[in-house]
Amino acid sequence: MKELIKIETMEPKNRLRIEFMVGNYCNYKCWYCGPYANGGDTRWPNDYESLLKNLKHLLEFYIDNGKNSFEVNLLGGEPALWPNVSRFARDLKKLYNVKVTMTTNGSRTLRWWETNADAFDKILFSYHHKEANLEHYMNVLDTVYDKGIPINGLVLMDPTVWDECVSAIEKMKESKKPWFICAMEVHPPQYTKEQRLFFKNHI
View 1 (cartoon, rainbow, N blue to C red):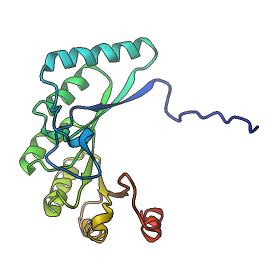
View 2 (tube, one colour; view 1 turned 120 degrees about the vertical axis):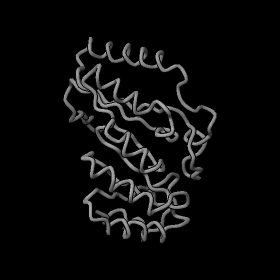
View 3 (cartoon, helix red, strand yellow; view 1 turned 180 degrees about the vertical axis):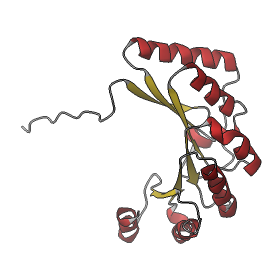
View 4 (cartoon, rainbow, N blue to C red; view 1 turned 135 degrees about the vertical axis):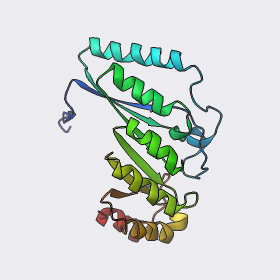
């Protein structure tokens, strides 16, 4: 019998990351996301004060048990459609040592991002070729980058439009802002050997 290998996290023991799915309402209907992420039957929390109270209760529990540094990542659905999303991020950061990140498709208007982007410590922008407008997506990332907020461009590599996704990555490289671009697998994966090499070699 092989000896068990102990696996330990590299994260400091005082830090906790929370993934908070604010709902499954999304303005995109990507086939690889499915109803859990775009079914639309759970939009977002309606009782804001109760939500904040519950989050405070949760964080206080972990503070009492040795955690004092938190990251809360908001995802969905499309979390940027939640009317209270930036208010929530700002309120949470006022109360605790929290970094609030968000995973979003970036489809809100440039004006929305100008007003709300600074509520977040980092934003992960997912690109979905069949749904997104590439020019708008790039303009949003450039705008948020100019506000000094760390961002990643995550390209969901839909195998049904593979060449178009690769072309979108090449187009993104034309941005004069040095934001990070990453090719992401979708699930269930349906890739050829050549496509898998793209993931292996892609930087």
